[in-house]
Length: 284
Length: 129
Image (cartoon, rainbow over all chains, first blue to last red; front, side, top):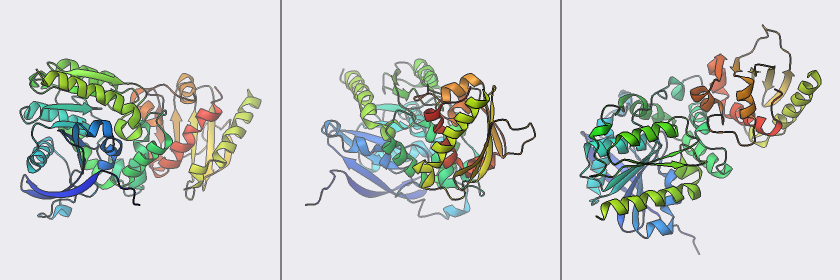
């Protein structure tokens, strides 16, 4: 008897800023859509624990896509993309997320992303608060400089290993070896996109003067950051949340920058609290 | 102190040479680096994933590819079985603590997987400062 997971994968074709993308996504569950963005240079397997969490999927329709150029989502099919340097911008990233939610006809989804996905969650709360029920920026901050580095694709080094081991310290030493090495493995697969993703993360994303314009009452913002995250340390996330009217900050102990992937049993404790807060704030 | 350094070097060498994760991808892990712990300087020469030489008293002009400089207090945190946040790796400590990496960064990047695994062996053998 085959041992199938309840998670299914599909492709959807959509257009964003004149680019045609065939996007791969994983899905499981029913109820409020919970749209999940992986971290830079990675893919949707980071959400494998959440996708198979029966307690959450009985009330939430969990959808984790591969951003174009990641995992099974190709670069645009209608452009000679190999003739231009990939540099993800805040505009394009936001437009993609909205186009994806529109393509799946998702009503009032919750958007959750980690790292650069957390930063785009903040951007969405600012730009498109009426499109989302709430956002959960994980390991995010108003500004996250310092990671747009040439080392991620230096011709004299093994880019796959540099990317994978370059983010190793972003995980907590307490996280299980198996999950840390799986995360490492995922990172060996995304090196070609990593630097371009980080253009958004460390250069184009800067909301330091915009946080007060995010309406956390209209679109609740629940930020969560792990204590072992050196890129966006807890103080940075807390400081960001404090400046957002109605913003909430949850500190996650003994976990790092890839919480859903490096230690899901710990992450889900905090995620359940974030979802409880969102239910409370959106049921009034 | 000299005897302690020698004993530590022997322990670190045995841990490195017996590490299965390094052994799984050991070919070409060849480089020379210095751990500068403020109160001790350790030169480690690696060849194809095995320790070729550990010098616990290298001269000031001893050639190496790169060197890690940090205070003794930082090195002691590195070597705890479960280090505190921001002392849990070289990247964390470069971004948030006093660790500086000097020399040929390319040599570090070329060997980053195994160097990182080996660095974490300090959590098992401690540091001699």
